[in-house]
Length: 178
Image (cartoon, rainbow, N blue to C red; front, top):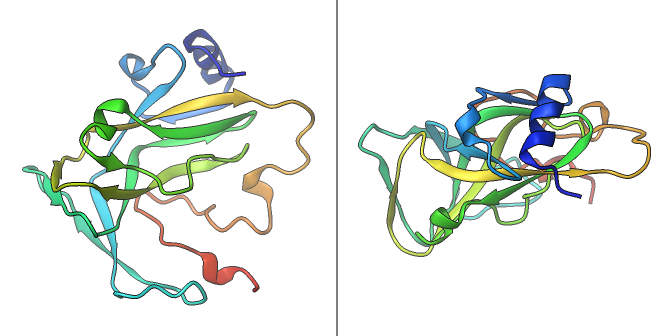
């Protein structure tokens, strides 16, 4: 079941959901709007290796925006820090963003109960498009879970994205054993 605006507010007041900064006008009927943070990450290597720690370089988004190009892959970050202690958060792109040809995630739209961090965005575009820091980029939808939770994401030993950072985080696939 998806939480409504009233339920999201109730869980924020109880501390089960946290959004920093919280802006009431960003609360939708059944979601919370998030915004593009001021930094993009770009991989340094032309060929990425899933067994290697692929390094990224950071680029500040200037006040006049930055034009994203097709056939490039960008890591973005939300302006908002979030915590979700009893619900499953799903990050989806806003329809206005999608209608500009911007995809904000390739596969990682679902968070885990206990995820406490900024969201790294996996951005690709269909056509050249100018984006700006602070623009609405997505929305978080909160789902109720059924049953007891044995281990939240923040307490999982295998969790690779626990370190709080307001910069995009590159793939940590190389930490897996395969």
